[in-house]
Image (cartoon, rainbow, N blue to C red; front, side, top):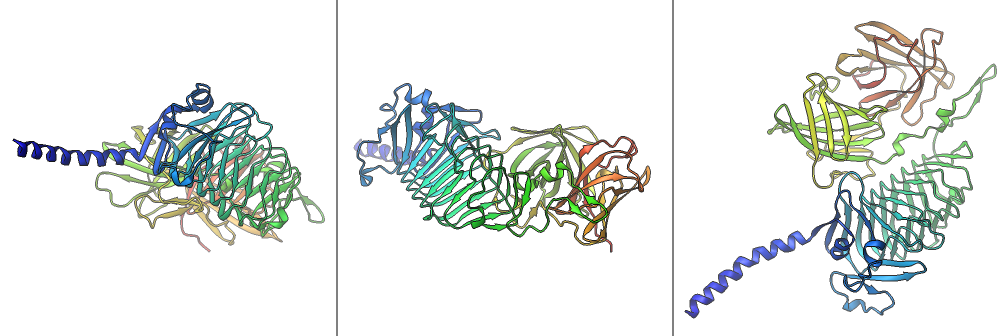
Amino acid sequence: MRKIIMQTLVSALLMMIPACMMANESASKIVVHNGVEFIKALGSNRTVVIASGSHINLTDEIFSEGLEDKLNIKNIELIVNPAKVGKNGLLQYNYQSDGVELHLAYMKNLTIEGEGMTRPVIQVRPRYTYILSFDHCENITVKNLEMGHTDEGYCEGGVLSFTDCKGVKVDNCDMYGCGTEGITATNCENLQCEGSIIRDCSYSIMTLTNVKGKVNFSECQFLRNKEFNLVNADVNCSKLNFIKCLFKDNRGMLFNVKCPGLLDHCTIIHNYEMGDIEELENRGSDITQDGDRVYTGDVEDEYEDIDRGDYTISYPDYWKADYDESRTPLKYYLWQGEYMKQPLRMALCQRGHVFIGEALLGEDSAYPIAVRGLSDMDDDVTFSLLNSDDPTVIDMQFTGKVSDSGFNGNDATSLKPVKLKNVKGNPRFSLTRNENGFASPWHKNNIHNFDGKDGDAAGNYQYVGPLDKQGVFELWRGMDGDMNNFTINITCKQGAYQYENSFSARLYNHQLYFNLARGSSTYGEYILRIRFYEGFITVTCVEGSPDGVVPSNITLEGIYFEVPSVG
């Protein structure tokens, strides 16, 4: 009898082992919907996913309810022996002048990530507290979240604080005021902020003190912050790198940077003091101060009126004010669904109005189809799926809307519905944000950049219009001294048309502006932006109307795919 009981117990224990292992595996990723679930989930070696559509107010849900003790949040004034802190770290709270502040301490390998295309929100009500403070943490990622205060702060309350931390990453977050600043980092090592926004803060953009190792801000936007020194880094910091970032509409001295620094292809539009900007290495950045373009790096051309003796070439305000769209953060999509009863998957990267990516159609599809897309002013998107043998031929087109949940549209020819939903997980694939485009999730060697040649070489550039609706688009470039003259030839079923630019133009940042005229006379204002990408161009209107300029039975605006150049 005892032998039978022992065998039964052993069998039961053996059956429990896989279940325990599975429970531990599932605990590594925890989905939460509110503040209490969020606090309970925090710890080391895990990913805490805040569900799509969630709005967490830590003040109202936790501290106003007096749940600190129940949720095992310790008073920060209690002395902590780091050797006795458990493997999951420690939650602490700190009293500020108008409320309670949450601290995450001694945690490792923690990711706090928002789910969905629309960032979930974390807020606090006290004006003098940070949204999240990290102390003595390692390998921390904060991703796809919107974070800020409900009221404006006047003293110490920023958005994210990192003290004595290693390996910090802020990815695709929106950090807003009225917190005093977006990021405060002290005695940290390796800080990266990618594809994020810091906006409307009341004191500054960031303060970095003794931050060592890699300190990179790439494809970030810093908007409408005020009003003292905005970017602060002390002499003990390592080199501070800004890569393809946008600084715009901020108020105050922009750079108070006492360490080495780099501005790599950034756009800066600032009407106040620049501060230490001349101490920073400039690698192709576009800088405007008080309405005047100023270049301290290696940018070749300036937008300024040019005296040519008998006449002056004046550039319009929209040209001077328009900043290069390559500065805007990239967005990533991974969808799946059905088309014509076949599985369809699409992976895309978006910058501005343009999409590049790939599709897999069918169960046995081994190699992806190239996809290019363009959205109009109403956010209606047309996706062109290109022929694998001839990229100037479009095999099919889908038109519709991109939403937080996926893509909803139709086949442009058959009008059959095309509905694609988001694939769970990170749609960024293996691509780093320092790359300027798309990396295939299916073939690692398939990497497509957004920007192509500027069309600097004289000659003939031919582009084939979508589904042969627009025929052949030829762009000719001539020279008048150091200036460029362009001619567009359109050959289509309706006939042949030629348009000359009514003013000389400069190519800058992969784009040019074209004011249409027929022959030597202008029929009206119809100004197009022609932008060069890798293997295609887009033609969009920035001012005026085609009425009276272009025959009503043809359309110049759209996306055109390159065929081999001649000449």
